[in-house]
Structure formats: structure tokens, C-alpha cells
Length: 178
Image 1 (tube, helix red, strand yellow):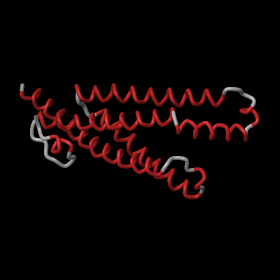
Image 2 (image 1 turned 90 degrees about the horizontal axis):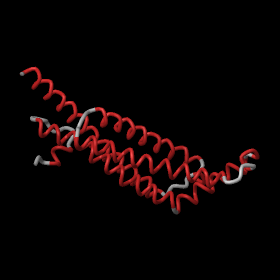
Image 3 (image 1 turned 120 degrees about the horizontal axis):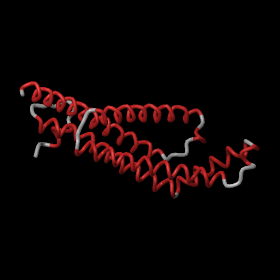
Image 4 (image 1 turned 90 degrees about the vertical axis):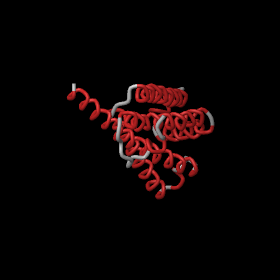
């Protein structure tokens, strides 16, 4: 078994197929960390966070008379939000399993893009919330933990990209040698 700390280091040299596979699997670890954070999000959305979403929908409906005429809109929106969050968790689990059992470079690239987008949109949301503090409904500790989770994921996905590229290189070299 290779050293996992070395495998998760995006600057560590990759000398053989086993090290490349371990580095590529770092991306799967990042995906599973994201699954745990997303599961917390689903649980939060089903409880205290759901009340925040329902209040926001009700506020929006009060400002739009056409939407206010639609009964059950709040419940429908909550159903879509919870269903969408669960779907994202399931997709992450599947992609994490694929990355673990058949490491490649595509999945880490996709998740790196998503994590960078998440970091940027969260930072932008914080800057916009500064102009209207009443609009900021998410507790600060959740935002901070979310930032930390995304930064850890970013480092692991970068290691996964390097590992996936190295696996491809080793595979091409093996095909060329035979």
C-alpha cells in the first residue's frame, strides 16, 4: 500500500503505476468528502434550512401576485430542492466509485471545475451579502466549513488530475513497448 499522504500531495513526484493510481484515487476521496458535506446539506434542508427556504419562497410569492395564486408552491419547491440535493449525492457516490475502481483524468477535471466554481460563487455571495446582511441566511460557520471542504477537495482533485495523467502516460508507454 502506498503512502496516502504522498498520494494526496499534488506536488509529489509520481514514479510508478501504483503511485499514479493512488494519486488518481485522491480525487475519489475528495468526492466522498463532498458526499458527506452534501448529506449534511440534505439533512439541514429537511430541517432548519427548509424553514429558511420556505420563508424565502413565501416572500417571493408575496411580491408576485401570479405566484401567490398557485397553491402548494412552497411545498413543491421544497420537494424539488430536497429531491435535487439527493440526486446530486447519488451522482457523486456513483462518480466517486467509478474514480476509485477505474481511475481516470476526466472525473477529477470535472470536479475541479465544479469546486473552483463553488469557491467563486460562495465568495461572490459573501460579498453581495455584505451589502444586504438581512439576505444572508446561511450561518457563518457553515460557510467557513464549506470553504475548508472545497479547498481540501481542490487539492485532492489536483492530485487526482496528476495521477490520472500519469496513469495515461504509463499506459501509453506500456502499449508502445509491446
